[in-house]
Image (cartoon, rainbow, N blue to C red):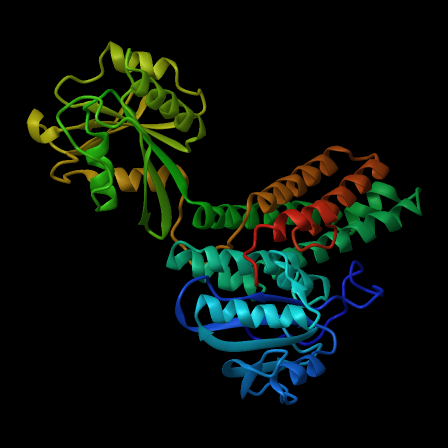
Amino acid sequence: MAEKPPTTPRPEAAGRAPAPEVIAAIATAAGRGGVGIVRVSGPQLAAFARTLCGKAPLARVATRADFCAADASLIDSGLVLYFPAPHSFTGEDVLELHGHGGIVVMQLLLARCLDLGARLAEPGEFTRRAFLNGKLDLAQAEAVADLIDAATASAARSAVRSLHGAFSNEINALLAELTELRALVEATLDFPDEDVDFLAAADAFGRLDRLHARVAAVFARAEQGRLLQAGLHVVLAGQPNVGKSSLLNCLTGDELAIVSAQPGTTRDVVRGTLQVAGIPLHVIDTAGLRDSTDEIEQIGIARSWHEIERADVLVLLVDARTGITDAERAILAQLPAQLARITVYNKVDLAGRQAERHEESGGVAISLSAKTGEGVELLRCELLRIAGWQPSEDVFIARERHLRALAATRDHLVAARAELPRLELFAEELRLAQKALATITGEFSADQLLGEIFGRFCIGK
């Protein structure tokens, strides 16, 4: 990542005593590989490196070195990179020890670092220190994990933009506008004889409306980014033998589920993931929904209903030859009221019908053949439409907490408009809007929130 100029440490990190501990962890994935990296961060690592490698490393230069045990025996040979504070990822001295990527040799090298006084880093602790030392804001820090976890190329590109500050810049611009508006309103409170007339002359209400519109626009882009990160959970449901497993296999292009003419073949949840226009679709095949005395099948049916309750979209499969019967009506009667649904009439190749999309009383219906693939593209397009996806490169990888913060900001701006002419309440709603918005970049962030965020990172990052 491109390095940033040193910035002022955050209040949480400023003036801490004693000095931060030295932390170390294996930064590469577990397993066998050509190269493995142990990362170390903390104060005064030049002396640490001299003890480990027998020589002082050059700053910001890859240097060949021997990594030695306490008895001077050789652990491994490789490269050492030394980044003195504050010009490093964490803002502290950082060492990267590049050795051969075997599990045992990496563990031996890590153990040597711990013998020299380092402690094992917690998940996400390197990135947390970067945040606390002002190298990244909280949205950028989260983008590090999002880039690592990106399931599609679109998600990766969006995460890189957020990592380099695109999302944070939008939020900071909104905060600057909100701060100006708050300053104007707070100044007005000192001149009660002017009040609303003064605000009107300064176009405070026009500023408020424009700010509300910008927040709504950023929310829309962030909502698209959440789709890139989290994807859409799609559950296939219906009676036994209507083609759920065949449709799963057709959508994913893999034989994930067993297909048989015997009803009740699928007795547990089967999952598959595919990409459509850069969006991860997590498709879940479920056991056929019917009355059964078979104990194992009953467990599978119970799990089916559990997945339906958690779904973003339900695809209800129906045999095109019979249409919706009393069995499907019974299923429909038990569905959550707000659950988005697509009715799929499968086996059009056997029914002598054409693949098509059409409207019906219950919503959208797709006629297709999971066996031949005819009409499956119509289903993919409909899933994207329900998700609200608008193809664009100008979106932000966003998390649920970002959307909640933006929604709260939007609601407080609406409430502020409603409080006129009570300027004290108007000002308070603006303050609450600013506080909600600032949680995105971490200006107002509780330690509990930071622990939850960074605890989800991998060790070594």
